[in-house]
Image 1 (tube, rainbow, N blue to C red):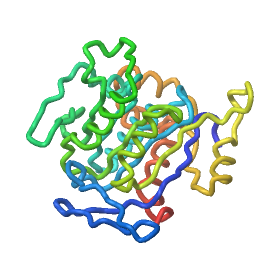
Image 2: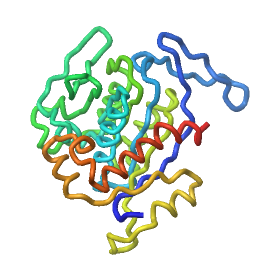
Image 3: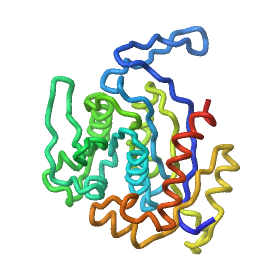
Length: 266
């Protein structure tokens, strides 16, 4: 297995909801009825995937972006919800920074990042006057914005919604998971680096974590300067560098998300 970032899948089976249909309450432990959210603006979203990490700087937003691009190249319509409130980097990675978010009757209209409108993006970066400045968010404001992002973005019809969560196990991370829980995400990708102590090029940590947790190991993405440059320039790495080892790793992960995750989590 190549050295680099590793991905581990955790999560639960998605509950598919037909557009325009409501959800019946389900019975909770003890005989009571547990409320399940109405689909609303997520009614046309077939699958929701969370991308998580235990800490910052491991490539979570990189994987979110490249997974969306890989799924788009498989003919899927993809949305990205960037709720990394303190470091919204995906608009830059997709060359969408500075674009305006408009309102419609259903809420916010996401930004389309390609002419075919096959990838749409909503990010807190679009709401900041200067995205390069550090922003300090108080807890209630963060939670309210996360809930608004989940409920008030008019995604339309999507095959996949990739949710780039804040790093770590912070309160906004938990708020994101709780806000999305009623919509039954398909699962989650955990992005980690495999080092032990100070050896940043060790490997095997992701496989071991997956084995201990009893979840699928999707693969590792080797460090590649071409990938870094593509992200910095807002390019489409999947299209531009098909001979890169990182391309093979990313497309393999996308194929497993498409074909293996639903079966493994059913």
